[in-house]
Length: 106
Length: 519
Image 1: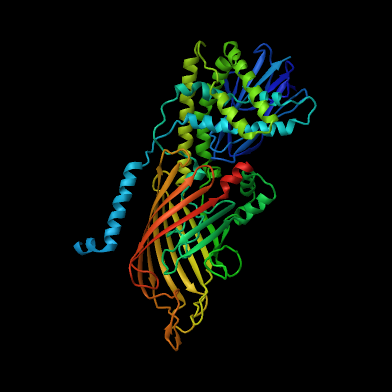
Image 2: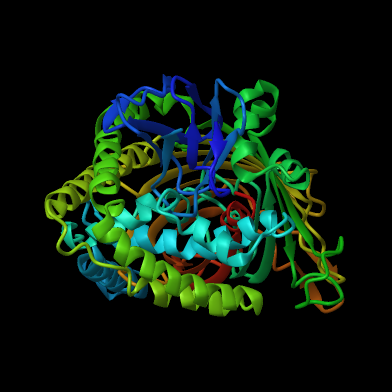
């Protein structure tokens, strides 16, 4: 897996590569996932060019408290390469945020 | 009854009640849910300078780094999908109703930042159940039950979280450490307060923090306090939100990205907007002008492209607006439920007696024991009960007195009032009443050639009733609150005459500031 253009949410991977997403640090945060337009429970998925040339994964974070919540999202590929680490840090008063990952199949 | 109305005490009480009822009538909180799209948009836009500064700080030393590239990354739709979806759908959001804004920490009415009622200068007749998580600071002037007024400065804090703060643990991580470690959890139930009376000592009127001005040490122990939404006892409600409205919101947000934000028709307009704003923002960062950066961001977002001419966009944006509304409403319901959890705490205060001038005789120091119970009878409000006993630490000299100085019982009702003033937020109107029983005189009398001399801090046997109305005005986002109170008493502890007082203070809860600096 590789990170495109220094943007940890703009990724690329090989066809058949397994992508794993993990919430590596979480404090007062709830995460929801949508993978290629469908609800998804998190964990791992395999890149498959026959399904879509670009996989799209939305990771939404709901903050429980009014301030001080955060989470760290780590994405890795089974083929090695770059590791994507993205932090969601709550601004005071913020109710939710989201990160939109795109993974282009090479 | 007629005699009562004619008396000054009852007249004041009657006028006070009418004024407060009018205030309530004008600003009674409506318990509906607020969509408050604009607030979420503002929070995210206000946070952009921080995101740019942090990212640039991390990337500036890497080969080929440029501020333009960093700003592009921060404003990239991958990163700002929620902000852009909110901006695009703001026209589809239901009109916000005049309602409570659940900014939980700032709106909390359960924190005791100032001194307890027995201190000179206190603005609180009834002590509250919680104290700031890290540090609090209060300056208050006046007095509630004594004949002598004073100015009290109080520092409040929790030792565990103060140490964590010195260890550079983030505000969020500190809570996680405490929850994971039972020993830390037990220790974190303990907090302290140090009060200084600036009217004492050689430099009266100036805060010197020396031993002469030291007035009281308070130990505060949480027996029951579950008012933190991150507490695991609320996991059930959060799980239900996650599986229901939060997942619906995620699906609708995905659709807005996939079928509006990322399509070429919108991207053409977006890239033009992005090119313009990146150039402007980069200039302000190079000039190290944070104020200009903030202003440029605010101005730049006023020309954010519109989703016109995109087929199906209306429906998708409307769905997203409804899903956001539902999620925020459900989240607010959980926070309101959390805010109603009961609090039971115990306070021990060691109160240092005020110095007297010769030939007056000083009364001994006192110890106060207070049991505090707090409930939330309605959303955002609080009803607090105090039961208190004070004893002399030693038998008073030159006076026949019990060790028991007084017994007190008090109650307070706090009602948040929505002012609709953005810089203020919710003010809190409080009504409080206290009954105090002084079982025996404690009047140390000194015989002099000119007659007898006593101290203004003496107490006279009898029953004392105090009523108080208080308005606490917050300065939004600063942790600062200004309590203004009026109290009326049938007597003071020394003088058996009706007494009307006004008190004012300023309290500073550092939790809000530290939460922003060390999220």
